[in-house]
Image 1 (cartoon, helix red, strand yellow):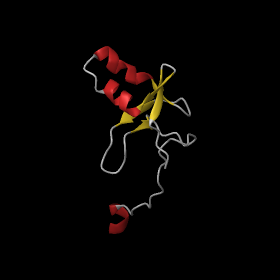
Image 2: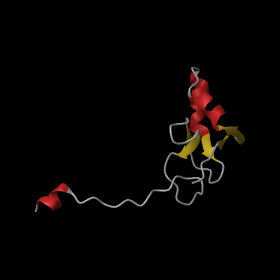
Image 3: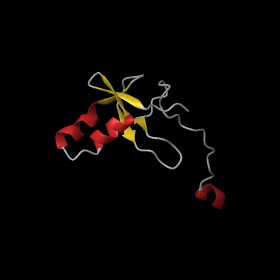
Image 4: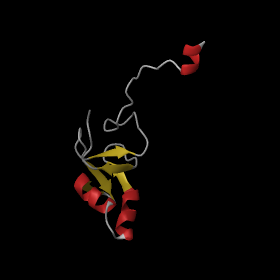
Length: 88
């Protein structure tokens, strides 16, 4: 699954590392810039995520965008039977 490692910030491409520095800045004016981060593909708002155990640092959309190739797709999950229906 594609993960975006860049975003647009005031029409400038920034890396996820730069965006994480902005997000974690002690300067309130700098932190406010995170509200202007947008996807390089669909121009919808994104937020930076630091690397975890299973994935590298990347951007995620504020709201999933199935039309964007860089958006995390909802996985097909099997519905579990509800407790109520199994009691009957």
